[in-house]
Image 1 (cartoon, one colour):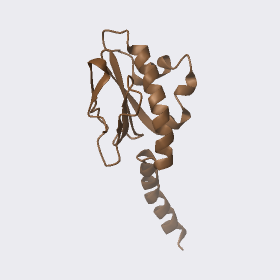
Image 2: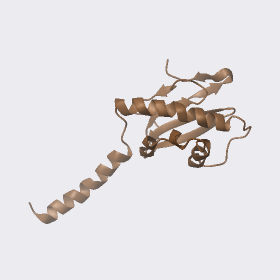
Image 3: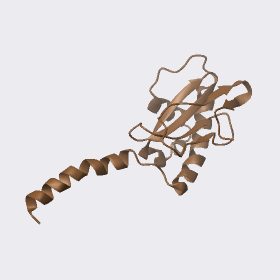
Image 4: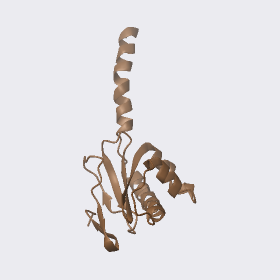
Length: 143
């Protein structure tokens, strides 16, 4: 094969490989592990922010670091391949896990509940959908 053609082909396909890593979705085994880690992390962030009356001004990454300072393992290395977002609905907190490129939602969890609230298997934008009301009543959660 012509070296120039091979070179051009390689560099034209390289961006596609990068995009697939950025937007990749977890398989079922990864989802199981991430679900457990997500519930633990959202609970920790919820407890950390529960005493605040006003929404935090810190970036999500800073909030996650501060909320897990007592146990850094809660911010599991498995999350590094994804984007984590924090939404404060006083006094509750919701976490959203998305593809690294921020285009697709993967799962969403209210920290006050004892189970993962929403698994997303179909294409969905990386946007919060859960609403948490008094007594940790989560609207929009999976049945």
